[in-house]
Image (cartoon, rainbow, N blue to C red):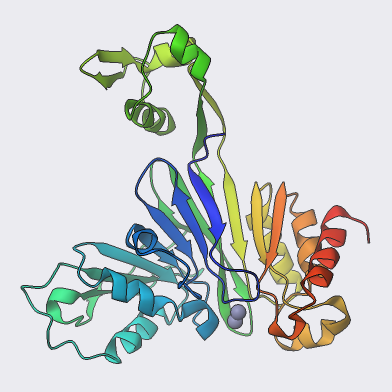
Length: 331
Ligand SMILES: [Zn+2]
Ligand SMILES: [Zn+2]
């Protein structure tokens, strides 16, 4: 199946979390959280255009340094999106280093931090390497909506959860799933090639049937033809939800269930065992059973527990069993 992105947890579940959403047909990636990024290759980090930060506890934000280090000599913009306080946190991170070697001759690397809250009108700050990362305040984000990022092929939605502090959960929503039927392609005598990506994008954008898709030297083919001949099939787009660091309050469960509803994949924290439910509540975290129950209530197709507390090193199976039992409805 030709999904637009391939999601991958960067680490095993006891390490600081990060989820890489790697685009299958483009040199591009998104990151949900900036935990431990050491296991990502330089290429994966450099193709990351947007990093979504759930909150600025160290285990979710310490990977910022590696993102910064590897991008320093690239002429590109990396977008950081997160809860209120993100712009200040980025400024503080940048202030920790000495930038006297940066100037107008440097690569045009920019960090653009944007804050989101339900009230809207979040703060936006730009930090250009060519100006030694001096902070520029931009006009605030337009108010309204839960959409953090919207492009032709996908959007990223958010929900604000309570973790003692505001903490954002994220959902990646592919606009429309488009698959190529290879036998039909061969029957029509058309070659495999990058033009198929352009054709898929045109379908997702809702371009008219008469739109000509350039094949290359072989000429072009109308978009409508590709549908009529069964070469391109469409279906509901992929939804991938990521939620971590939340108390098991009714408001959190409701907000997350709504965000995760019908997801193909839910990545969700399962920090504690049910026998330590009181400790989980004190720390504003979920137990594995609570996480499995949310995954079940949201009707997700697949769910992966993550962000296990280090106190259960050696007991990973117990956490997984508890999660699966609640997810499958065995309790
Ligand atoms: Zn936290
Ligand atoms: Zn955490």
